[in-house]
Length: 312
Image (cartoon, rainbow, N blue to C red; front, side):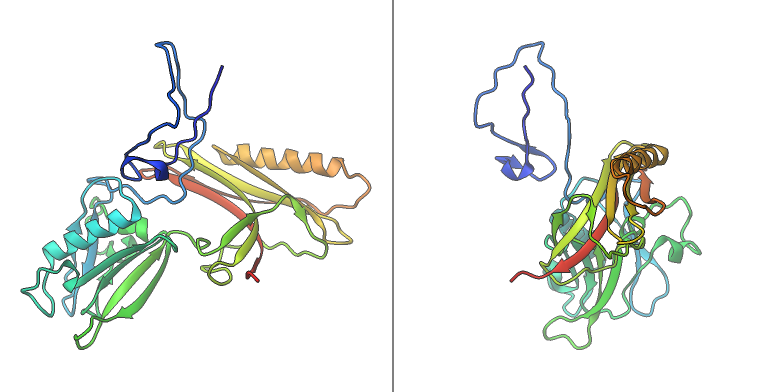
């Protein structure tokens, strides 16, 4: 008889979020013939793995010196907090100069942090207002094409910069914040496939922020993940609306290729419409998203957001 185990890194007795040991509540007796398989794995937020020769350099300039410099990041799999601590340390080891050169405080010049609530990584220099991180496009004029860069991972996300200061220091520096997801400040409420009357559905990129912090965000979502190099992840949403009222239906699908997902969506909508022959429907519409795993785990996400609403 098959049994199912739910394993959560938050229930670990030792280890980290990426390498841990758990203690089962009950003893599980197995035999030599017992087989195990992973049916499903959920990764709430993926932090890119640092791999030597792939994405282990961070390029930047300091002050008025136009000559780019870089630090080599330590290879490994990290949580957001551990990633920030590692980057903070390697920056300080190579460029410790600041308002107090004799200080042994790692935070004297650099401040790198990870916010679990907003899933964002901030890399800041507290005293240099011209601190600049290079993405691949900026760096292509001088960086060897074969030289790996961590910015290729960072700049795939929403980027903001802001002035930062340190108490007792004149002037200030710049902090770069990279948000790994634009909907992490919302409480997601999953809906079924029904579109209300008089609705207008638009296909467009998800904005940087939706509503206020902690707002309820009503949505229909499809998502597909893979961590296998060379494999694809595809997710899609399709919809159809009644001509006279605007009410309609959503369909969601996910798979390992674009044709697979599109076929699922087309057949699902065909079935939905066929079961409601007394209505005049508009032409179905489809929105799909996909990506290929080249080094770090990837996720394809298609989401239809209805509205954000505060709590009362």
